[in-house]
Length: 396
Image (cartoon, rainbow, N blue to C red; front, side, top):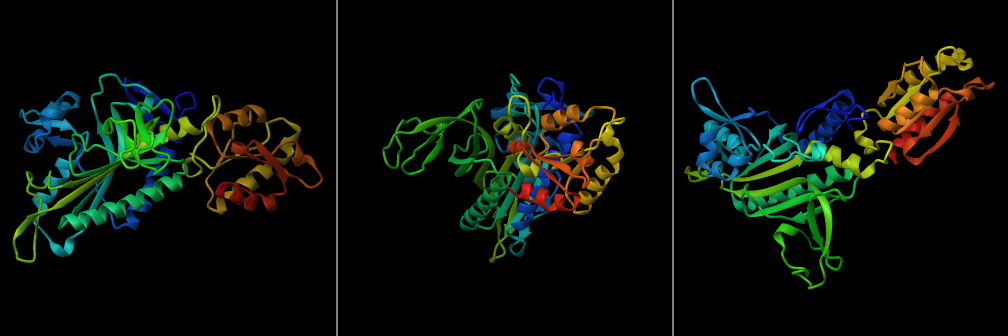
């Protein structure tokens, strides 16, 4: 990702997203926004600084302090750079509340940076000090309603991962420092993964190895198979772990205050991008999930001074036609470079479709080369046939 100009390493465990990387990240954010909106979630943005006294009230400060970035303001008040936002949002609800029954269920989410003082940052975006996540926090009036919400969000996650298009595993997980009664993790299988999941081929039982010390399935006694993986999502049914100490409440039918039942649901966006590239790419060329490529199509016009330059207008016509169809296209205007060099760059960057105005444009009926980069195939087409063909490639 660094060599291709997707990200830049600015400090140990910290990366800047460059234009192409940011485009891909925004596409992932847009995809997730669509699925969150579909389940009635509303987008917010919380401050990155959280008062440490909130973490003291939930008894998490001592547990997590070694991994926290902490600071004092000029008045000596202590804050931390949030590695997660349960305390922050519970405090906000407490200040707004108590909520009314008709306001529930309430589903609020954000996409934001998080910080963790990793002992040894490694593997690029997979284990960094600053990372970007989508966090959904849900509030329900009772445990049964919260469980229904949990299932609904799980269905939304299924749609998100299916749209990304890379096989994933949803496994039973420990609630850890976050807490709660139910937890699941979402993993991509990868040899470089530092997590290990155990799977039963017989009954499809799957669990994080940390939570299952046995070597046989607890459901059917068949052997459990271990696989290296990378965790990219985590969901928790929290109960009142945060709402109770931070007094996030609603008014019940008897006009009495009750603590809200909560859930939290995270997706590691920077991890998803990095893992997708790790799984799909070759040694020399980046491969993206089709929905997340920085640009879906790259148009390469003839080199300046070449015989094909006389047909350069054809490149602009192709570009305009595609753009008018609301397809995501980029025009490589570095005409001092050869077509071959620009084609190599386009492949390295991972554009799924590359359209070249090359030698075939000199035919009596000019044709353009349409390359399906991920399938290593191409066809020569007249301008009027390009759009429909490209649309077909991007649907596959």
